[in-house]
Image (cartoon, rainbow, N blue to C red; front, side):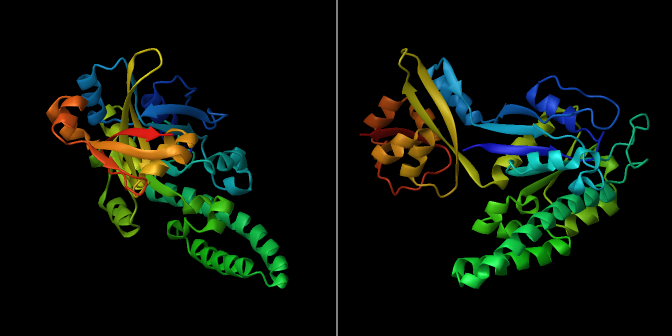
Length: 336
């Protein structure tokens, strides 16, 4: 399962710096708006000490972690929803992401130009929130008009769609996000921006976060991180929190490749995924041909110091297609 994150914000708030640190890729960073003309895409490993311990146990030469795709999207400005500052182009890129991370400038460095003159985190958060909402209202308006013209047929699905569209339209007009509606089919079809999970990354130190901002974030129930972009350990929290926000867990597979080398790999799935569906994440054919899975918790496997030893002690379980995969399961799949 692909975990994709769009990094957004006003120009010159630290988006490209964040992207560069996360992916260790060189991107164009300059002290003026719209230095990033195309979305930069980078793949980042999900930090997982369990995987590292399994690699050590099996002395594996090949290790494949679960990954996150980060999209560095150029700065948004007021009016982006209607095309201001190349806005339409970048809002389109956000549609393909599962999480939006809004980078908000809190540091007070005066030699870095701010598009609004001076930093104001609450104003900046509201600007981006407004642009996402206005873009969604534009999309919703077109879809509602189409659905209402089709409603004459009496199709019950279309009638239900109209009801949901009107509800979310009302919420967005009130300045609300609509993540509670994210699983509705009509919302997924429209790829609405305000339905996506969001994290606010406050670019600065703890002393840069005043009480007014803290109160605002608390009252808005925002998921946020305070991160000094010069410290790598803060950025690891962003990856982990994004993973958790999407309700994802990891399971592991071990095996011998065709060239004779061992491989240990982490796979991302949603909580509640059954064994057969998890097999399909590895390869679509595996889901159809799934027979059973041999499973053990990663920690028990480490403690017994090997697969064969764990099997000898009766710690390897045989599970069928209805088994719900748990975070940290190590699986060997059997398929026809």
